[in-house]
Length: 367
Image (tube, rainbow, N blue to C red; front, side, top):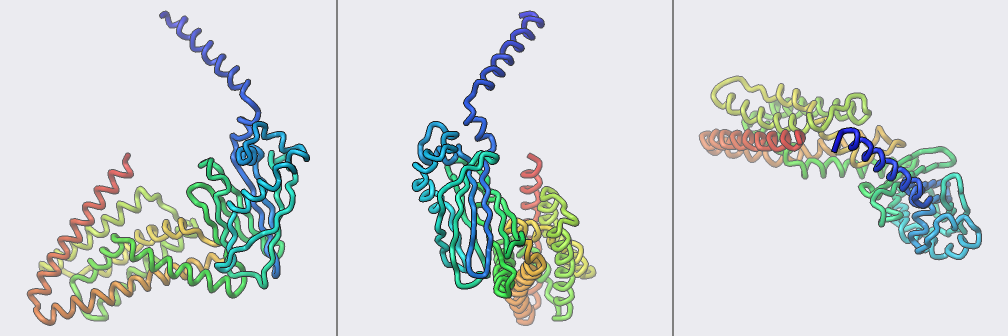
């Protein structure tokens, strides 16, 4: 076929596609934006809320062929009980670990948002420390998103987005109990992260393998703490935010460097662990920050959550140091040659593990 003929054929195909798209039902286009909107107003003795859901999603739940017909009062009323039952099951509200069961009102059409608004209320004895909001509202659609706004005494305190990858959001209230809940949650998160992160554990263990007196170990641990605390804060506050494709391989590289430097010191060279801990502590702080962001930072208690997570990280590190350092010291006192052999073999293992992780992560991020 000649070039001109091919161009003409492509033009005809494109025109046909355009006409087909223009003829698609309106409801199909309406669902191009699968959003819902959830507003929660927290007061001392009660909760008020409103959920605005797209008519396409609501029609799907009741098997209605024409979503726009829900804007008609009679049709909306006919399906109101079924829709309220569905939404009441899907939207789970938990205040201080106690399920909140709202009282739902009849739906109100909101044409400007192409949806129906469902108002609801619930009572409680006092403002809770935490309010957990859990979805998803429409699990049949993995692209559906729910925009969440939480107000306390009329003031916007928390915003979030619930979707298939993040179905739970926790709001910590501005009460003293809310602050304590933040501290408890984020200290536990920091401890948990240390113990599920083999790379961070191996880095700390590598720093301990050569042993040393209490003053030297304290200097090493303090240097690491100061460095990672600084970058944790900078990254969490989004002042400095390097990409994971750089940070994750760099963390693995830090483990390689610890192992190799141990072997160098084992051969009679100077002990540079404090400087390595300080230098690579900056890198590990960025790694901690990525986990903290995934956990979800409460805007209303940002400082407390950052502080508490860092405390949790330090508690986890202290547990590792408290378990490993005395054991290595005991072996060295019992037999100095055995202590040196353990330090040498351990340093080789640390360097090899770090090399494996570095190659694995570098290849993963290069794809």
